[in-house]
Length: 211
Image (cartoon, rainbow, N blue to C red; front, side):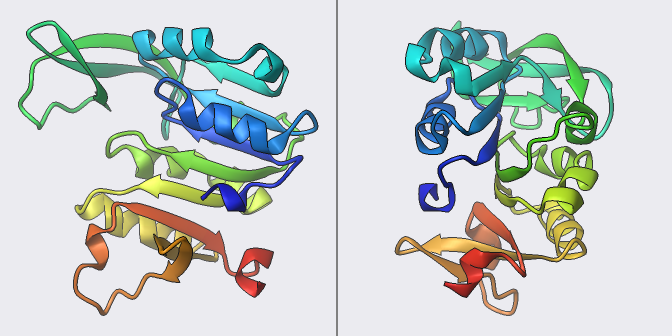
C-alpha cells in the first residue's frame, strides 16, 4: 500500500484510530506533503494526538469528526465488554454485533464540504470506518471527481460492498486487491471476490496502472 504514496502527496486517513497509518503517511509525504487524519472516537483521538512525533506534526492535521454523506451530528457507538474498550469496534449508528456499547455524539461533515476551499490535490485516501465507507465516499463525490485519488477501503460482504463498487466504477475507478504485494484486478465472475475485505480503487487512467 505505502508504495502508492509519493513524496509531496496529500493523503487522507479516515478512521485513523490511534494514528499508525497517519504517521506512516506523514513519513512518506515528507515536509512538502500533507496528511489529514479523521478520528471521531474520543479516546482514540487523544491517543493519536499524544503519539504524533514532533517532527511530523507540521504535516498532519488531525480532526475529531465523523465523515459521512451529510453534515450535522452523528452518534458513535464505542463497544466495550465489562469496561474493556474494544478499540477496533466503533461504528456510526449501528450496533448489530450485539455487544455492549457507550454512545458519543460527534460533529459530522462530508469530504466535499471539508475540502471545498482546500487547494491541495488529494492523492490517496484510506478509509476504514466499520461499514460506513459507502457513505463517506458518497459525501466526497466532488473530491473524487476533481482529484481522482487512489482509494483504499475496507468493505464488508454486504449490500454496501456492491453499492461502493458501482459508485466508484461510475467515477472511472477500477477495483483491486493486494496479492503478493501487487495489485490484482477484482474479477466479479470468480468465487470469493467479495471476501477480500481490503480493496484498492484506482482511476483507470492513473500512472500506477501503466507501470
